[in-house]
Amino acid sequence: MNKAQLIDAIAKDANLTKADAKRALDAFVKNTTETLKQGGRVALVGFGSFGVSQRNARTGRNPQTGAPIKIAAKKVVKFKPGAELTSTVK
Image 1: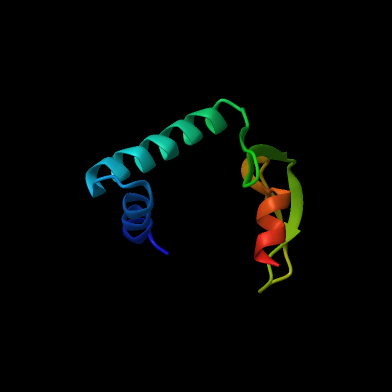
Image 2: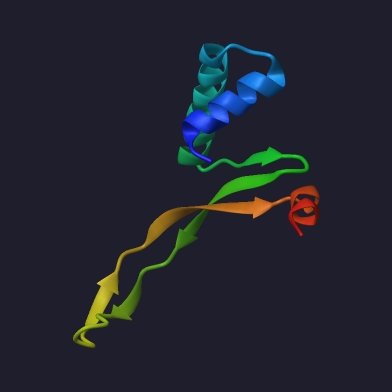
């Protein structure tokens, strides 16, 4: 499902116009992004939670040459599915 299809589904299920559904989805994405950028966490009960995790710097290997390379430390976004979502997908 792409963004346009998601907007259509939200508009249909919530009895909204497509423009209202797009604004709602864009607001969700914007607020989630800002919260994660500040190091926060977004939890949706039953669905799951988004959080930020720190990956330490490490040494890796170039797969073509085998030469060691330095991989910089970085923050990554992680999603942990909730119990309800997990049981529904099974």
